[in-house]
Image (tube, rainbow over all chains, first blue to last red; front, side):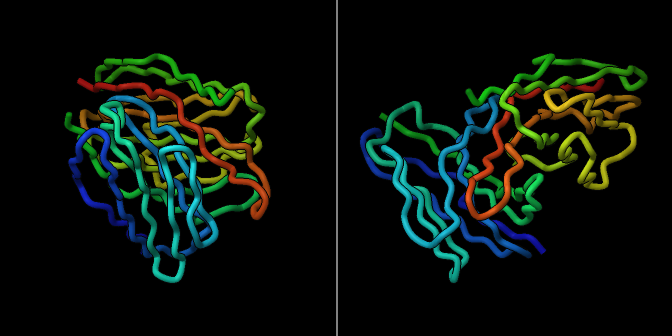
Length: 113
Length: 117
């Protein structure tokens, strides 16, 4: 079966740091993606991990531990515009011609002044 | 440029109507995807086209009919839908590369908000 867990909601203060966790149990693993989705809009790509460790991209970092089935997205210097849903997605199939993603339910982050 | 476009942005249709959703990308991507997303839920994969051939159909009801006329275009034909089919329909595309060297990220369009009355 496929199971991806994320907290449903989180709140944080502008300027602070927040960590959004994602645990997964999937039949197959070929990388983990984080997407940001504002209400009523398309998901936008934030980060990708396929090897263990930390990937840093400006204010956003993502970490992966394949042995633990665990990832987190770290957002620093939070801004009001970071209020959105954050989707963790595991690539479970990768044929070379296409790839198959399974999404977690998403974490709704609310940033307050 | 990572733009995927979708038309229309909003669509309201009756249960007896026939309509189509359109998706276009000019990034040279060879894989295109249809997802359905209900409110406060994650996107659910419906169909995948790879090199213009249907590669995945996630047991989607036949009232949804995908079509890939060429490598840049993806359509979703709708007929005899039910109110529970009301959702945001997202199109995505990816390069379609071999694993191990490239991320092959899926890039999403803005979606079509569908309401079935």
